[in-house]
Length: 193
Image (cartoon, rainbow, N blue to C red; front, side, top):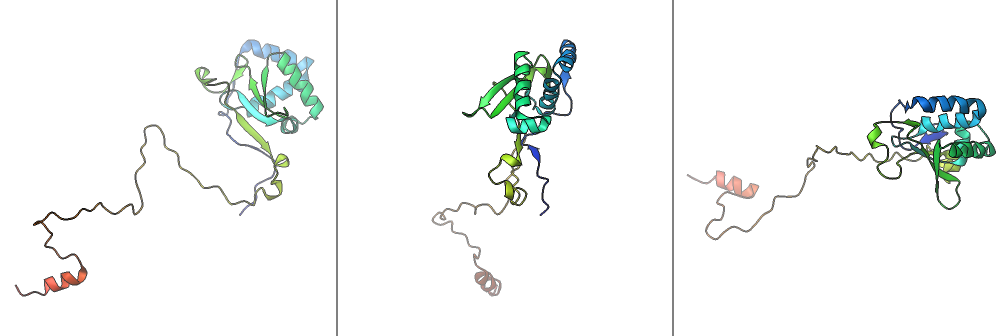
């Protein structure tokens, strides 16, 4: 089994390769790049990893690693982005070290405009091997079983041996007269006509 590179992995694929932005947001972003370059760079990282519904879930340590900055710089940059209404931060769990970062959909979006928020958010999730309790075994586990999925207009076709056909007792007087065993067939074929 080939070992996977041990770095960061996105658990759900981002929503395509293109993002759309609003022109006015670009002008504000240019100003942010001059006044708060680390916050601007962090916004690029978040946008590059967000899913189809404008959100990404990651721990602060993983996000700092992706943004190539310290945890303190990350926290300051997140404050700038929150205060400027660039992103909304939703805490996951009691400690606040893992969060959902929801990008303002008037700034940038991925996919169709009408499908941005079906619920509060849907997100890409970024995990780091350094935060996993089984980090020494990553890459050595057997592959997960592939479970095929069906599209809305598809139906599953039965395969395999299946169950035997249902049987019921013969009706009186209508018993089959054909041989039912191989030995009965041989006897039947060798009977004088």
